[in-house]
Length: 308
Length: 260
View (cartoon, rainbow over the protein chains, first blue to last red):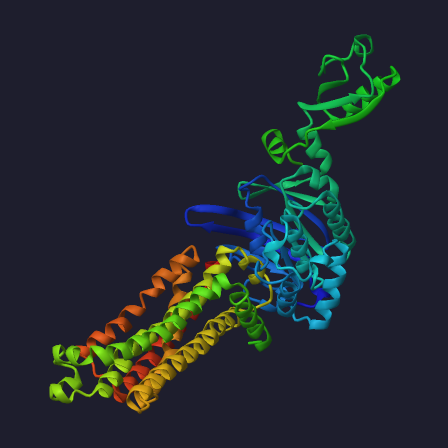
């Protein structure tokens, strides 16, 4: 492991190719990630999990090189002391208790039992899972297992965190707790967060790399993503009381949803359309109680999207 | 190699194995059942059927004796060692196979390997820990089962004939050979685990290792093999060489990706 001062970026991936038989999962993928939140966006099958596994040292790339904290994580076992991986799979031993799982992983990271005990208690409390410490993992719900998996990954205070859809099974409060924790860690930790959810990108506010069919499609910003996905999106506005046709007159692309005109749907081209329509409705005296839209999926972005 | 990591893996695997009766129950139940039932059947055969069996099986050493002086003790000693012994030798193979297959392929099947392999543990620490986790319970179970089987044989033979048949040198050497059988089985499981998808496949293929051992009683009865001290000395020597080759090959062929 190189001294920290000499490390330019915590994670440096250069032209890696990873094949599984005849399938090329990653092709000439290069990226650099330093401290902070580095989002990797891509649809199913884009190669996101394979990329994380290569960075975690689980897979040996067929071509190219990976440097994590200055070393090759596949060959240098010690460098993985500074790396934690949370996959979409909780990765805990079902027949062991939560505490035994944390003890086992903590020991492999070189922590003493007393360190494990204190870190585990703090993390479990933060995720509201302390009461499950003595329970065997198979008795827990999917969400609680995911919380314990997150505690496991954070136990060693890693310098590099690799997260694969970590909020997939969490309730809203726990998901927000995790996001807050990651934001607080971002100044000292290089976080790679892979997801296929655009709203997750929005919530995390990090740099964004787009992976498509095993290739880096480019870097982008949230604004660009929304510019790409907004055209054609349907936004639904709900009112406290039915609105009259008169109130909606002159507004294009509006469809009244129900017989009593308590909500409307509108096709928008950009977020500006939402702002202007809502302003007009309020000016005309409409009592808006909610504005909702179906979260754009990464496929929406990929299909019509441009990157830049 | 960091011994703390080795012991952490071994302790975790052993704890996991013995955490649920559905895992360790069948693994221990069958050998324990055998260790009690088979010696009882042996005394029954000795008491009521040995003379006629001995006469029919002309190749039995005791069959060389005149029929009217057929020595039941010799028959029981022969049966306990040559027939029951190989049956009990399948225990270390089957137990080691079950635990090792669960230990290696189980990580893949239960999707815990990703979290495990992303820790700083080295390949050699992981392999050594898992081999120990398979070997230690196997040796303890085998010693326990041999102790029960030997004790019951002795209790019955002393009760019936006033003599203790076991332990003798052959029986002790047979027990001594059991860790080497177990180590070979574990090595084969490691090699197989790299190429199969789950625990069941690894267990089924590795279980084939018992076939040569099961043939031993027939070899002894028909005179192809003489199960004596020399036989076990050569057997243990051969097993040591096989173990070295199989374990070396398993270490060489083991790739982290194999259990992902």
